[in-house]
Image (cartoon, rainbow over all chains, first blue to last red; front, side):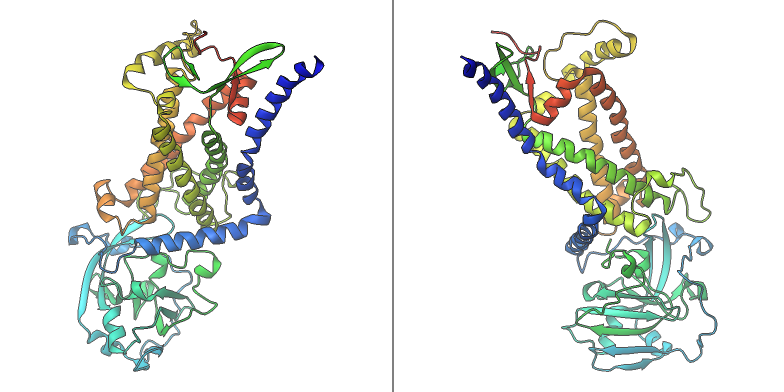
Length: 242
Length: 237
């Protein structure tokens, strides 16, 4: 008799307990946000995000281009470099050092780079901070330059170093994209110091911080070093693909 | 199984409780409860990290000259800096998207969308509920788990959730989906939609919490266990 009365109550309790237990995965997610766990979680999340961006990238899908009257005036094109340009760098004797997996390593002059077919494009420059402008960029396709120096087709990465101690690295697919430029002009004028004279990268398929300024060295490689990029080493996405 | 006064079918079980045989209706399946509480966490993470990202460029206009629009204090932000906030935002964005897709698919496949989604013919039921809550008029009879005003609120969160996910994705891949970006008015406009959809989504929360507080334990408990004892919207045999 006593048993009979207890059983339904126990049934209800069990029923509820069973249902509550099914919610434990939520606690797991909640726990992942705690400082002890989130570092690994966020690293995994960043890797996933880069992998997804890489999956959406297509070597022949072009970023949108714009007409001349849609350009942001150059005075309104933000500078945003992480440190001021160092005027002590001797631009007169500037050469681009090319090393790594290339048939013809060495130092290349600006004239040698300018001898490549010139491409001028009005494209968006989107900053990770959330602003975007439309700029005109002129220069040689990085893919043409890589061909000129005899880059190994098996290479997977390109690393660049800059006169202002900035540095970054890229997947080879994005470097071979037809809109990725070794750029010496903006708005039909030679690059000014603030915009990265004498030579900068511009990659409309990546966020702005991947468009390194003042580059002086390009290394073609198969493995990435420990230092992957100025911002990337601090926590920005390495791939940076948009 | 039992039928609501509006004609929906609801899974029930009979149990003796307090010496009387009572009906327990399963209001929320595991997936609904799971995504609900998961979203409670995700909403906090996504909003706070989103505000940190926003503070890197707290404007909806040009970069030069920059006119700041809103300023959010550090206590409302997550991630410490732009890079950290983006890691939080993107990591949890995948979970938010997955949980949203799972929830919507579940609603469609199970047919439970009838419980949650406000249908056009139910719109006229919204106003009496507004009158009840804001003008203290008598409460219309409860015909099913959610009244029309509730359904409107829940439907709106699904819409805002979808807008927030789609615009967020376009902000993530604007160059690859350039046509969609162009049709929606550009990157800057999509940033505005994304922000507006967040406000829309969040506007649901205060009313939701107030209603839970007012209506007491049984609603809160049913979101934990799924079961509600003897709901008045069921047709009695």
